[in-house]
Length: 350
Image (cartoon, rainbow, N blue to C red; front, side):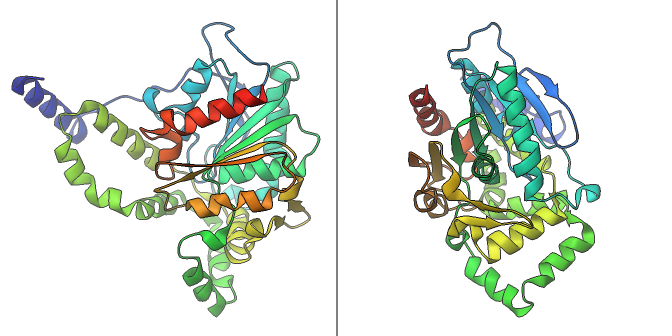
């Protein structure tokens, strides 16, 4: 661009960020709602024609405390659009907002009810086709536990982007557990129970703390890229994603704290819930796991643990890819790294 064009673009972007509606308006991939009940809205993403190249379907599974838009941040950062463009029928389960009324919801609600029903509906919508589960973060844990606990479901494979499969490998765990031992681990659960869960503002704050270097560098990043509209649009999509983060139900977080963070059930291969014990060795389908080189939320070693615990799977593929926790799913390098690996993994199942 000429100097005049650069100055004009910079001024327009500065105005849009400071006083306007933003750099780029949200543009979600077109979809049709197939099922809409509390915490279980099921979308089927639209195609211009019947261009499916496979009989199987992909069900995208988000974690809790993160909006389902993680799979469709913007047109150029959308695993949804990528899958649809490759001819794969693609679906998404969206849990919506989590509030005080949901405080009694726990892992069991997702593993034995919400996700099994969504999987059955996706399969039925495709005439009984098998379903490939693709989960991000704890969404990957949901996918694996659901598969292990429901052998009758038409699940063909499981893919996890940064799932925490061993809390002993998570950053800061020794310090967290040392503090918890002082109160027998009850201080956190008592507070969470009293307020009915982890409210959305706190999850937003925690995510920003985890990406503190990004927050610290934000002013300089904007200044250095004020004339780069595409770069600022990417930044804005992450900001929009963070602003939409919901909270955790009280019971769910109590289980996450007690069974995962303190007891590390998932790292030992068996998760003990109230009336249910789920063994990861009961996952009997191929699994693909991604660990990110710059992921500080789920270090790659915590993902790699799946090679040790998923002993019943006919194949467990572990790939180390560049990017942060969200970056391995929707970052600028994802198209040429994680998405390419996923394409090959799903094609091999075909």
